[in-house]
Length: 415
Ligand SMILES: [Zn+2]
Image (cartoon, rainbow, N blue to C red):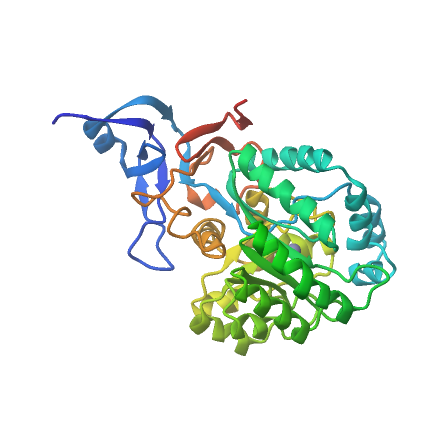
């Protein structure tokens, strides 16, 4: 057989987890002793090492011996661009003060808003870049980033332009979301602020092409379901796809808004009714669960992942990285999802790859090792796929490739 030349071969893994399986929500499409052929940034074939070596020769070969190969992780929910941190607030939470109590007293999101308004674009870019490097070295190849620490036009633009610059500068695939409705800014009432989001901010954000999605914090004491609907329906008219922070602390109708407006995803869902969750099977809203968020908020509450999986919902997982939840790695989320949500390894793997890609409308581009998709993949130092969720993330990631480009080796970003 005449061998075909490709750019990269990744070979000799214990398992290559393709997620390219005819078994629907259950199958992982595992190839034993497998690898991947990559050409011009795309997946050519995921198959056994034997077959790949017979069919192809490559400019570059990456050895994945004693490792497993997976699609690059997709993080569908972060608040990655902001100034400062809130380590002091975390100490208060440990002492028993609740997140919503801190927010009502002008701390929480508002404290980060004050700091972010004062920050220069350059400093936001530099801290954003460092955080994205951590995502990348933790295996994430696609990261969604929300604005929402500006809460006025100029500062929301400053954040979204930083996200845009990160997208151009950093190898990670970046998905920008406008979340002006993250909190009510100090000195304004929520009806006033919702009007400014709808009439002033959204049209300008859409016109500047700075966001693909619009998100709203639908919660008692923040934005109610009527305000959330008003924002998301205006966003949809302007071409921004809806997402929603739904029912994190109370059942305030967030999941219902998501169903009604066919949101791409509804996130958190800690207090959503079974009826609204069931409805997501028809409306095709992707449930995104964020176990590290409840974990950091010390609420002891959790979304009913088992119930959602029993309904057949394609459950996705994200970090919800923010100053209140300092956690950037999807392998840590995996470890929490197994322990807190009782998701098994297969469910978690789907949750951080193909289902997370669906939560961003990117399932045709990334999230599995299907022929023709972007060659976004990770190799992990693990004997088999059951180590996802079993082990925490330390020193597990070895190599990361994005669009066929080798960007992490031995767990470190290649400069
Ligand atoms: Zn969030």
